[in-house]
Amino acid sequence: MIPWTQIEPVLAEMKRGRSYRPPLFGISWKEKGGRLLTVLASVSKGSAAEKAGMQVGDRIIALNGRTIADIDANEGVSAMFDMDPLPFTVRRPDGSEFSVTVAKGIVTIDPLPQWRVIDTATGPVGYMELATFISTADPVFDTIFSELRQAGVTDLILDLRYNGGGLVSTAEMLGDFLGGGVSDDLVFSKTLFNDNNSSFNSIRRFQQLTNSLNLSRLVIVGSRRTASASELVTNSMEPHVEVTIVGDTTFGKPVGQVGLEFCEKILRPTSFETVNVLDEGGYFDGLPVDCPAADDLTSAVGADDDPNVVAALSYFANGACPVLVQQLKTDQSHSARSLREELRQPEYYGPAHREFAGAF
Image 1 (cartoon, one colour):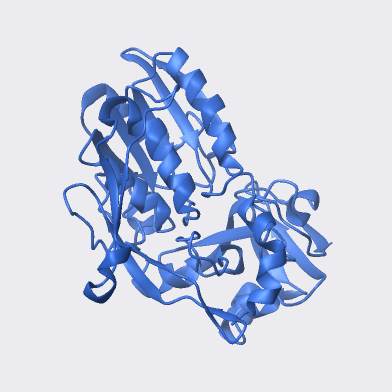
Image 2 (spheres, rainbow, N blue to C red):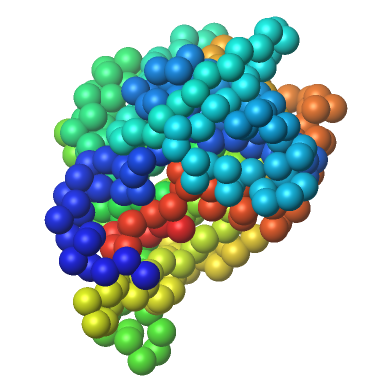
């Protein structure tokens, strides 16, 4: 446990996206078929890894001169990341290799890496990637949704594939931009405690904002890394607009924690669940995918050839999912245990505070 006296001075920075577990290299990777491939799924902007030349799709093949297979068979790859600085050997997708020694640094998260309007034969489709629910996203939402609204967007692709959660307040604000135009003052979500603490139960209603969309259809790009506040938004929107999940089934975290001070420490027991207006919740096995699609790291996230974007646009155009490629079977063969271990890589630990409902 971390003493509250160590957390309180940096809490404001944590909410603004400053790394709450410094220092970090600023990378995360994924597994395929239960095998650790250390293919980089994300490289944080401005991080030590990015400055060292690492890119999404690169594969780490050695650390400190030892192969990944050797490390994984002994102390485990995660243990190597205690070393600082750490020598990396990296292989590009084209087969070329380079070696670089990287020192850890502070990582500041960009919650909204990209957004755009996609012109299609059936009308404009909005696309927005949300990396995490932190307060620095709040003012940017207004800019993004103003652009989407002016473009006449009523169909939106919301990319949450690497979003493990975050601030409930930011999730609620996103709900207002998504649903405030069509469901003003209707119930967005309910927060429910046990019978002994039902006095703390609360209801959050949609609030129409100036740039709330008149949303008709919402596609969520999800994965086994999509958790907590991301699932809260997805589940809460289901009764109000047509919601389709593309990619993979989500993680499954319909509960949250409260912070209780105890002997100068903060305890964070699981204390409440969230449900939508229909009292639907309890998705501990994740929210099921409707249109499976591969997370192909050879395509940039959100690009025209990103299989998830292709699947989403196909669904909007035809009301049906595209034919799956064989690679998908490999990408979706993780075990539940390996998926949860993947989520608990250092880049995905969360701060000890009630509002950070996506914390691990």
